[in-house]
Image 1: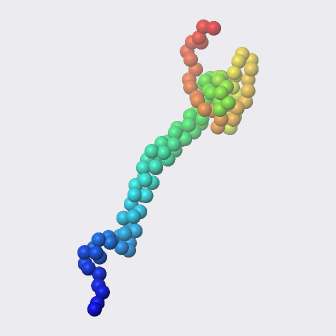
Image 2: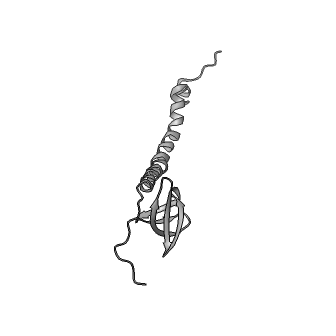
Length: 111
């Protein structure tokens, strides 16, 4: 008596070897692609935009620092800016800590 596996049972086990490996890894590749498209790519784009804004900061721009100080740039050097946060009050800040950079308002608000 010989014991052989019926052909229908062998076909039901699915592909083996390299083809089976790729079929099993396909969902992980799709998940990785989705994570790249939704998380990594937009974050790197925001980082590049922020770095270009920091590189283009100039005297007279309104800025917000990482600590929440708002002021107007009075002097720019390679890696630091001098920010006037009140009349006659100037502080030095490292450029990389600037979180928002905008153009100065045309007219000050009524106080």
